Length: 301
Image 1 (cartoon, rainbow, N blue to C red):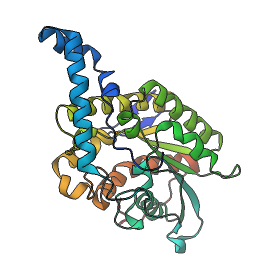
Image 2 (cartoon, rainbow, N blue to C red; image 1 turned 180 degrees about the horizontal axis):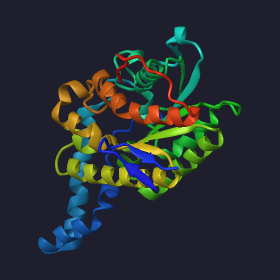
Image 3 (cartoon, rainbow, N blue to C red; image 1 turned 90 degrees about the horizontal axis):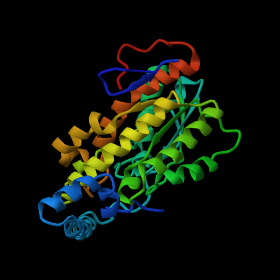
């Protein structure tokens, strides 16, 4: 059973490089009935469907040319111990795709993992050892190899998973992606970790992607996020609806929220994303430790 707050956070009771490939077939899959309906209105569902596929393929090529790879394929290395002076360290691991890895951040301290680690350290008054297992370009199927990269005896207190965008753009079924997410959550739970899932962001905020492909991608990403949220609920794990919490900011402030490729978050984008996720991590920390340690009055997310 899940109790949700208005913040968009659930509270349970009890391939190297980002592939800028917007697959028309993946987008059409959840929208097949709509495509057929449009086709019927135009006098032929088959012809309209073929035309839509052709259009989306062309728009996908346009999007790839606009985005390019100006950021390279390697996120800033941010793994270290944050707020060393606080002592009594605990471990935080981040798994997932380029957002989880921090591609687009101007400095290591601006990555999602680093911002989460600093925020948690300030709130808990304990130092945080950050471990980034996330890999740029990963689909949900890569979560297993990311887990395998962790030592068998590694037992992080908290874990963050942000994934799904590449599954959408690569045409991966949400059901299949959800299976990989489920297996990863269960494996982390077996290690004794408390997990927060950041659901698939709203790909409709990507202005380099032409319309109507952008709208189709937005609907597909919302579908992916809904399936991910259900997996988290089933396993008693908190999740944060990134599409609804920070998606509007990316739509309204693209110049500041996106990096130079207009595809990945900037340092500001990561700051807003971390701020949305930290309350859920704070609650998981309290559940994991069985206590509510004092926080300094000026502690900010």
